[in-house]
Picture 1 (cartoon, rainbow, N blue to C red):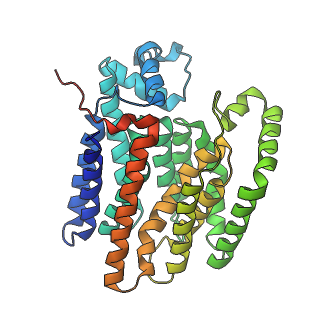
Picture 2 (cartoon, rainbow, N blue to C red):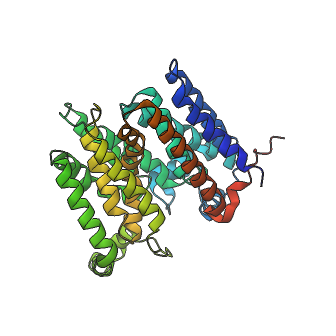
Length: 366
């Protein structure tokens, strides 16, 4: 349908922001406002299956805040509270969408700030994320979306050189809040300290180990891993099993195109790492390494964990432009990047929820 042009238009506006030399920060805030309106004013009844089940849940199960304590909730408590708050204000799913959209865009703005990238690079990062994953996460009101943004903040509180006092506690607090939106976030309690440890490793060594491990798992190890996961489910029993696999989830084979995109930019980032100064470059290499590893394991829990570390890949994509040292070749590279990500966005729109999002409709304001 012609509505795809709205998404491609927004993406293009964000991308153009990279070339604003003055006032990039104002342009970024303006684009975040546009994104807020884009998701907040969208018709919340036009979603895929996840969105449908969340709507039904809001309508039939969610109590108002005054009755919250007697309620036995299906989903995580943070997400449930958010629904309950919306229902208390006004019993209409659109109210929930407004609150959810505000929180999501506010967190996204904080994430961009915490990357410590230049303002123009933040716009490029926003462009990459918008094309790759934005609408699937935000317009479907996913529980994990809020958890992902909170974990991105936790991950970005890690710095290459030193650890600010008190920042450590914030990381773990963010992880716990994320866990109240999606239980998979709890694994970050183990993985965040690992990032601290690994950022001191030699970059080349890290990339080689990651590549070997990732290819090994991809081509040989998935059978073994699925046995381990099944074993863990047997030992842990019902309660813990839900952390590893949601009821009715189907394990899909690894998408090699997506794996290839992640891996190519990972290597480009590594190759360009000495061409610029950036206070988080080793940290981002570690986070991207985790994304590469998680992305080679076809277990649902790892597919979920992958999203927590995709911030590493997105930043790697932005920084990969430093592989071109001459201004002209860099502009050509950015043009190629633009075309490639527009194709990715178009493909996402056509395939996600069998093309539901191709049809953009404003909420019926009577």
